[in-house]
Image (cartoon, rainbow, N blue to C red):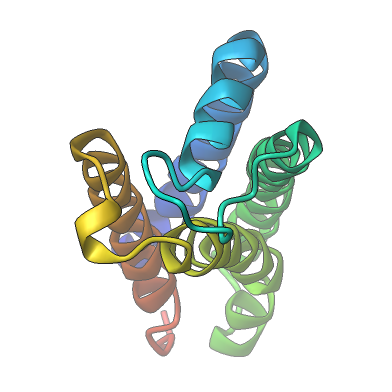
Length: 160
């Protein structure tokens, strides 16, 4: 039973991460779009790889905060489903995890695709500033944290 409660709490923590992150992103929208533009630029080089048109920064930033709110909603709904199935059979509890998997999966996709693939692939190692390096490290920690929650949720359920 304790493992099921921990899984519910981890689903709620992923929901809180999405909610707080999404609200923070919208609250500070101008500087967020500016930072998205900074991440997508290839500042200080003659490269044509940078995405410098302002629409790319708005699209990229919307991808971030929308993904966080979707993660929040799906993980919160999944946590409620997990709570109601916590006393049920292992298969019932496992089936209730689907929304949480989807919610966390969306944010893992957003973080990996958006920051590691799109933004990261635009830069050669010598072109990454200290600020961008720190942000990629922060993104990596978020990926690891969400991935660990996903792995823990995926552990097989036992009979109560």
